[in-house]
Image (cartoon, rainbow, N blue to C red; front, side, top):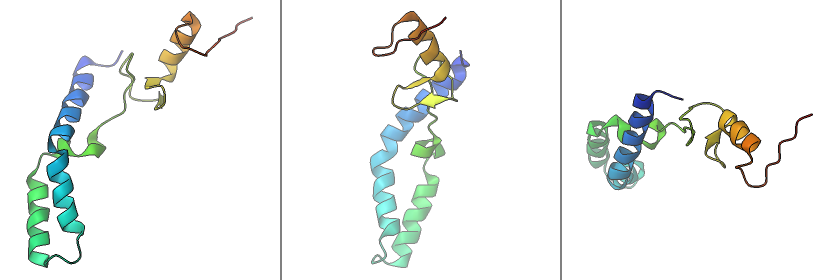
Length: 101
């Protein structure tokens, strides 16, 4: 199991990203617009810099839903390789049959 504080921090980041997504997208649209005046684009850049860093989507870390492990994560299954192996051994993953001899 991962540290509870690390898992909770990641959950908090997800909430922050969701809360600031619209405003960040609007500011980025202004910054990327080459037709807009340079002063307006610079002001948008400064406003974006004032926003919380954890509001950026790239700050979110993919973690296993079962154990919270941050590495060896399968996106399609939303779990780590270790949790997949354990649940597969128990027969709790649909379509997975683990054999041993």
